[in-house]
Length: 221
Image (cartoon, rainbow, N blue to C red; front, side, top):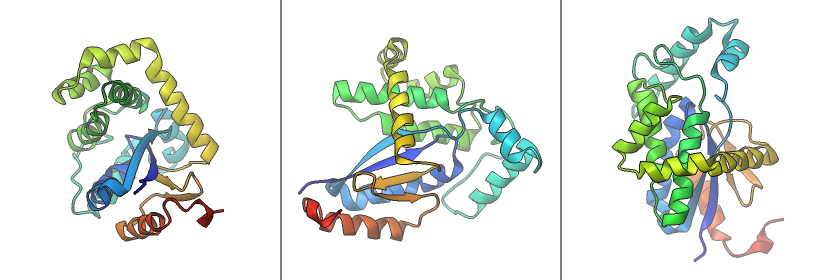
């Protein structure tokens, strides 16, 4: 049986993507070999200060956004946020984290390993659960070390520029597909898109429908 590819776009600083991690894990557990996630990253919080000035400047700024994130998370029993998220150790950009995960993705491809998804989760947990400034490479390298990653190999992918090139590819793919929100899942070669706080049942229903037609390319036009 052929697997159904799912491209998952998100920004590591997006609270909705953090909340939806549990749904991704449930899908992977339920469908196992029937689906394959391709995790990509795009720019929502690439320039945090400018985003806050533009989107929240007239609504109370960072403090108002911090309160908003707490209110959002309070509606989900599986999510616990540190009280100082977006109040202390405020990251200036999500790009360093995206670069580090890109380096891990390249390492995975060369070594036939699968460490990048765990690194992604660890970075989000560090930010939302412990209010760590994940725009700091020092903090990111500590997270990678705690995940028992080969830090020298990861740094090599950063030093070579290959990780930067992979992030650029992600950004271009997101732009080509018209991705505008985090998280966004695309199915069927980009023909179908689900964005934001989509319930597990809707995700499940879409995947079940796609798995019915796997291999039957004429079923889609």
